Amino acid sequence: MTNLVFFLEEPSIREMLKAVLIKILPEDITVIYVVFEGKQDLEKQLPLKLKAWECPNSLFVVIRDQDSGNCLNIKNNLIRIVNSSGKSGVLVRVACHELESFYLGDLAAVSQSIGPRNIVSKQNSRKFRNPDRLANPKQELKKIAPNYEPMTGSRAIGPHLDINNNRSTSFNKLFDGVRKLLRPPKKV
Image 1 (tube, helix red, strand yellow):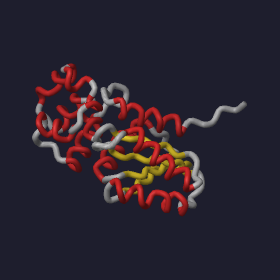
Image 2 (cartoon, helix red, strand yellow; image 1 turned 90 degrees about the vertical axis):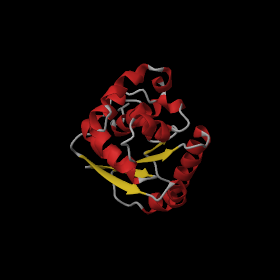
Image 3 (cartoon, helix red, strand yellow; image 1 turned 90 degrees about the horizontal axis):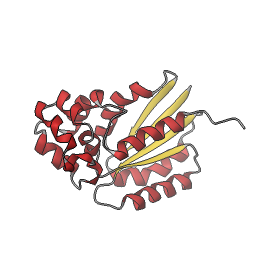
Image 4 (tube, rainbow, N blue to C red; image 1 turned 135 degrees about the vertical axis):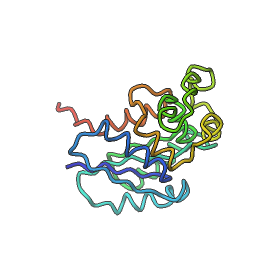
């Protein structure tokens, strides 16, 4: 039995992950979510949590929003923190710019879950072709889907997200990374 442990900056991403991961994970994987109180709390406690983790057969995924920071600097800092813990089998991913970029990458999922129905046609507009470029995805999502609230929206949208057809590069890199992390090592 393998444990897949997610270290998350906030609870809304946990709600999305719960719905999406059941689509891709084998049944013999146990998922554990460790949710922090924001990015500073995550970065402060992450090395302690990793060092203290004693459950064998555990793999780890660290997810943090980019917000207004430099994506590469944030990722490198998280990798440095992970390396200082001495743990291996850790995937670090940064949501560009916020979790809501994932939702803007699949407006059909937003439309099916929280509406409005007419937003699907916006997916091919210049603005939503690459949602990771949007500086304020949460604000953009609220403009086109006024009913969106982070927790309830994540719960509602997550089951509808198409794991193979999302315009958010950071969404795709996250789930490609999870798949690779779980792939057994090649025998030489």
